Image 1 (cartoon, rainbow, N blue to C red):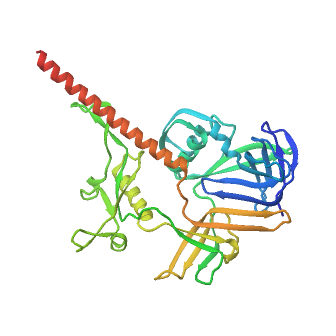
Image 2: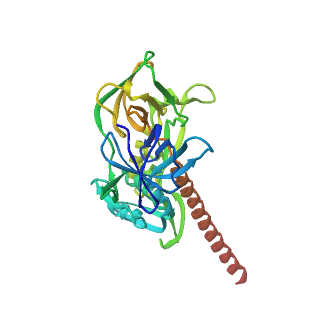
Image 3: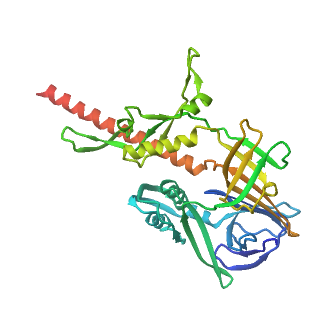
Length: 393
């Protein structure tokens, strides 16, 4: 059944049903894109809201019109994003989260918004981070990263309008339903993509910045080098994978032995060397082999239907030896036609980094540089004052 689009203005006042023709495309990914694109005879206004019931799950979804392409003649092309995107317009000046639960962190991110906290699973533990001069959606994505959870928006409808908007946190969306992909030469409608991410066979691990202390052990307010785990790892601040070194390493200068390809993993909120060692080993397991995705028509999968976040058993017979592993449906594109048919394209593999994540990492690095620069300036100033006193007296 094709979706029916109910149109509301930016202030949630109903405007009736919006007719569309041709093909309606819904694209969504874990922790990222959730968009609608379609053509219609009458152009909605920017900021108008679209309410529709998902034919697969029966759940209500809400999208906001962000762009319209309106030719002089012909249908209007509409692009709408999930109403979760309205959090881009909610600003957080500063929220310092220290040893907080996921539920408390979610409450802090949603505080300036009209969204409510939904169900929060147990087991995320207590963590901390700084939400500083950022929007609420970026804060929500930061919480997903630090607490190791995934956010899922829910829209409830009553009286022919949205009555409640909430965000829930789960350890993982989706699950295992028994679907399988057999990748081989005779398979049509499937593309294997090896991503450009570097392969590291060894990783240095760094935690939070260590405070500078004076001769009496009192913190001066500055920060110096990051925490390492050499003291609990035989004096070495990195971990490596020997099998990965032999396969993905490099020759040394004399071409006598294969050496590691080094990278680094930074965990700015980690202040325990044992935990830092564990986190770095976990990161290495993900970094020591190429990132591969499979873009496949859902009709090529055997077994149960696959939803966003579900696992799929992948058997890749074109690799030697044959690859067998579980991949996750991290992106789903559904194309509905006005006459009712639907096409599904799934991306199986890993979630590619989004722009907010890259910006957050850059911001953290800039903050580190500023901390070191401030600490260095304080130290230089202290030495200069000492030398001046010695010259004077």
